[in-house]
Image (cartoon, rainbow, N blue to C red; front, side, top):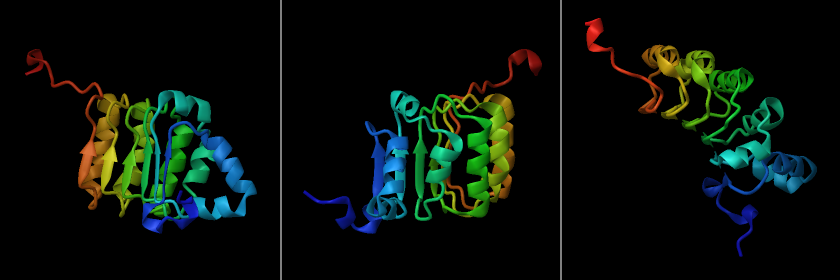
Length: 176
């Protein structure tokens, strides 16, 4: 069996399905080997409603520590039921500073709403590394999507965007 430390650095990824993220972060704090490995991750995928609830993805203790991983390029936080303004502020700050230099960000089904999108939008516009962004089924509605659209006019690196399933509806015929 291959140990994590023997994997080539481009294969280092963490797919969280049954592990508790907070427990993993605590273990990495106490183990130098795990802490070194965590600092080399390229991908983190967290994709389960039940898992997200169990991990308590608290803004500073969870997401804040994830965003300190300098090699991280892909961050997938799908189905986070309690995405907050504080989560959005932390992520926006990381995108503006460019560390980590995320190329792929997925917050699909994370229940963020328009207010969180308004906080993230300027940072999305300013990001020089972000290529793929998935905000599908996030409850953005028209307000949040307008903010994202404004960000797109400033961003020159984004090549893929998914905002499907956000309650956007074409104007009714009566409004023409």
